Length: 74
Image (cartoon, rainbow, N blue to C red):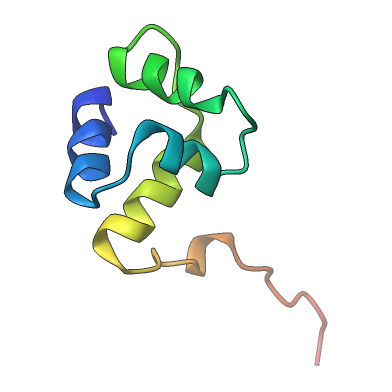
């Protein structure tokens, strides 16, 4: 997700910088980090992009590739 896409989704959800930072439990000044992600001056961590994708689309991505494989022999 690009910084511009992230910002668009945040605005579409009517979340402020502080609001999104609070959602991620980033602390009192976490909004500054979110601001840096949107400006492209700091890399956005994957978890933030994933959370934004989930809440903006209201869909959980396909988890199949990440599930454990049962290796027991029958």
